[in-house]
Length: 383
View 1 (spheres, helix red, strand yellow):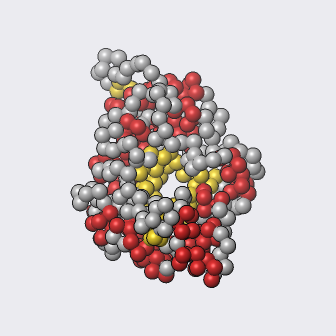
View 2 (cartoon, rainbow, N blue to C red):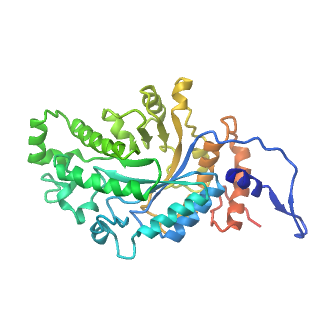
View 3 (cartoon, helix red, strand yellow):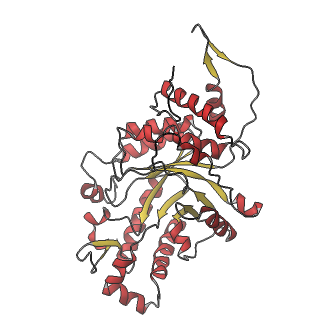
């Protein structure tokens, strides 16, 4: 119903003399092609305020996106205010004002629900956890290589690591009602593990002959924790590529490399897949880069129909290195609209010339509705 009303709202035009609103008679036969049509927003590298997050949700609704992937913490800051472990944000956030309180999180979840959008949280482990170590250095691995004295990924050899994560995950599934929890698993620095004598001894005793096997042991433990909490897991592609045996139903999220090959391999192994590698909004060029987003299709790989049914859809990713409240909306919109159309419309809707005209008008429409979408194509104007 919400998506139908959104379609209807886009058909309303002002008469030439401005005296009335008009809707042309038409017939619409429309349905989403993919069930997962998402946008990842990183709030660790730069803090994004709740009012701005809600404006992002507005823009998502205007584009029929239905999953807000909240990459809420990372190496750089820990703005999630945990009730069980408040010290994580007390010491790990950029500033005491740059945190998401329990009320803030619930407000975002509720505002998303009203717009027909799920909120899926990501707490990336065992890498990307430097901000966790500000308050809990005992969770991370001490490095003895060129980064001597620094802390690396989570220490997978200590039971306290898993006990801590189990308690935190118990809170997370209570706070975030979505069925899925994204566990990350990307860009794990094996060099630090290799430099630590205690880690190496643990591997020897437990007959773990590679760091991939050590990572597998860690990931399997936390996936089991999520499963015990009656939730499902997503992981970044490295977890799969490194040979971790994943439970049936674990979603593998593709962010780099040969997407056609990965989609084929992941779905051939019976695992659901999610695509993002061709939809990185932080990769900028001058004008018209939406076309490369539009020309990427999640079903563009060699595979059976059964395999293609395992592709849930995809997400555009707005990583936070160079965006904050002042420019994030312009970076996202209307470029994400090209991704949204690709995830919604049938595969034969693929003409970039026709799409350019639609996108130009849609950017103006979003401007009128309060979203400062940047011009998508070049010189022009909005009324």
